[in-house]
Amino acid sequence: MLIDLRDRVVVVSGAAQGIGRAIAERFLEEGCRVFGLDLRFRDALPEGVTAIVADVTDQASVRAAIAQVVEAAGRVDVLVNNAGINVEGSVETIDPARFQAAFDVNVGGVFLLSQAVIPAMKAAGGGRIINAASFAAVIPSVGAAAYGASKAAVVQFTRVLASELGPWGITVNAYAPGMIPTAMNGFAEMPEPAQDRLLDTLSIRRWERPDDVADLLVFLASDRAGYITGTLVDVSGGKLATQMPQRAYEGEGAPERGPRDGAR
Image (cartoon, rainbow, N blue to C red; front, side, top):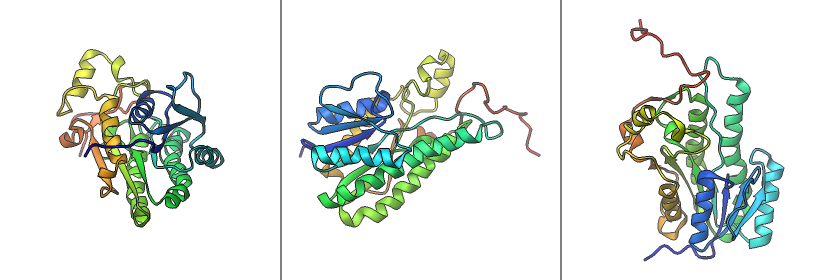
C-alpha cells in the first residue's frame, strides 16, 4: 500500500525558507493542500502553497492564521510545527532576553499552533501534529543551553499532548533532525576541519538533507503511521546513537574550554 496524502490540508510553520520551505514543497508534491506560515516571506512560495503571515509567538496572530486555513480549506489534517530559532551562548554570558526568546518561539509557538488546530482536528475526527525537536534535546551541546532546553521541552510537550489527544484520533510526534546546513546554523560556512569534526560525530558521515526530514514527515502524516504517537523519531544520521557531547559553536560568547584537570 502506497502512502496517499492527496487532498490533505497541511499547515507548515516557518515555511519561508530552509527546511520549512522544503517540507512545504514536499507535501505539495504529495498532492496536499499546503499553507505556509512565517513572520515574513522574502521570496514567493511555490505555486500551490498559500503563504500566510503569522507570528507564532502571538496568540491572536496564530488563531487568525488557522481560522484563515479553516475558512479556505474547511479543516486542518496535518500541522508541522517547524518554526524555530537558534540561540547560542554560554549559560554564564547569554542575555536572559535571548534565552527567553528561544522558549517563546521554539516552545511557545508549538503550544499556540497546536492549541489553535485542536478544535478543527477534533471536528474532523482526527489529525496529525508533528513537532520539530533536535538531537540537542537529548545530547548536551556546549553553548546551546537555550536551544537544547527549549527542544527538550518540545519533546515533553509532545508526549503530554499525545496523551491528551489520542482518544480523538489525533497523533502527536516529534522528530530529531541532525546537521542540516542552513542559514540559521552556518554549518556550510565552517572551515573544512571544523566540518570534518562535526561529521565524525555521525554514523552516516554526510550533511543531512531537507529531503531526509521530509520523507519522515510524509510517513508520520499518513494513515500508515496511525498507531505511532507520543514519540521522538530520530532522523539524525546516527547522531543520537553516538551520544557524544559537542561544542555547539566557537563564536563570540562561546563557553571557555577550561583546564583539562579542572575537576577537583
